[in-house]
Image 1 (tube, one colour):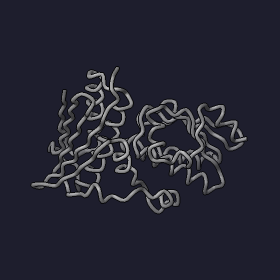
Image 2: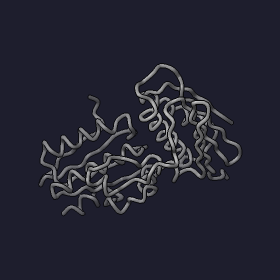
Image 3: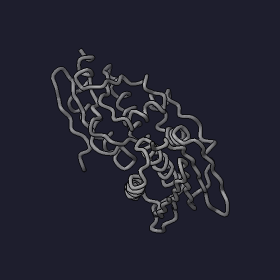
Length: 140
Length: 115
């Protein structure tokens, strides 16, 4: 089972992505909490890509999301042609600075790493590719 | 501006806020503005954030909670959170910051803890 959607880099498109994922996973019978983890990881990743990877919104559908479920393993692949980033170099969120107001956020990447079983990022031919793997709860 | 939260004012500078829907990057900035404005305009010192109508929250929503905590703490107030749905509670657990917030199962418990 798989699903694919392409969007242009604009925050307004995120709801469409989340609804699309939810509809598919519900029809596949994927457990609710696993589905919510995957929606969260996709949401955080695409939000970062749009916010940091592109200088301005565009109508070109340059962000592609592909999700495949084989047995109890879900693989999520996100490609974009925005600015190169280093997913693994992102520092852990600094709570003290968030509380003092010196820094805002920094939780997104940490969340993705925490709710997925495996995350890898590559940069090739002007494209970022982010691949997550999630082992879902077996349906009995 | 679309209203993302209902706020019930109680006595003694206390209020309960009920955010609605999905707290993600699309709504979090507006929600934060609405809540901070209400805290200032109504001189709220003690706030309960009742999350019973929030099905989903990303890190953007979490940042709203931190901003509110900072705002209230700076003026000597308190923030309590209650009625977290499982998918939202998971965010607090995953970030390992459950200890940063006082979280209650029910609004009555959160309000009782303020007295």
